[in-house]
Figure 1 (cartoon, rainbow, N blue to C red):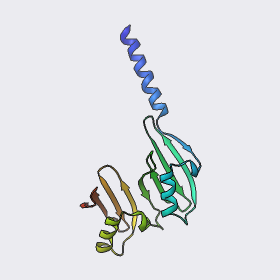
Figure 2 (figure 1 turned 135 degrees about the vertical axis):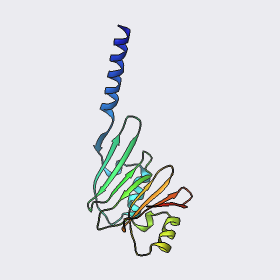
Figure 3 (figure 1 turned 90 degrees about the vertical axis):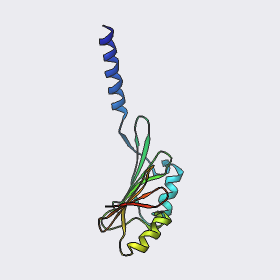
Figure 4 (figure 1 turned 45 degrees about the horizontal axis):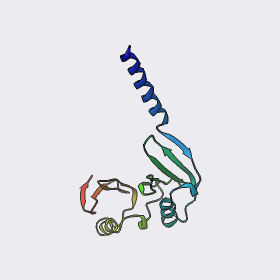
Length: 146
């Protein structure tokens, strides 16, 4: 009987966690963390925001900003950008690209634009308009080209 009761408690706990995970909710732009608002205003000043939302998982929060032109930025709970995705007719603003990566791209890919950029604890991934993917470590050293 104790095993059945313990099993029921475990199943209930897992279903509760699953219910709270992935809870997207639209929010106002001014409800973003200050770091995220500053980033958007600095690097995307001319682009109109279409939607701002928060994704509250059980242990974490992410924020998404979607622009009218289809571009999208994902921020972590502190407002630091995690991913910048641009539509087919735009590119990541050069001011949003870290200076060391921007220098590398200017020297090696002068006629190519950045259409997607991701950052995580390991480093940066940059997708170019010519379909190449470049990976950089946290010290901005190129570690892979795909």
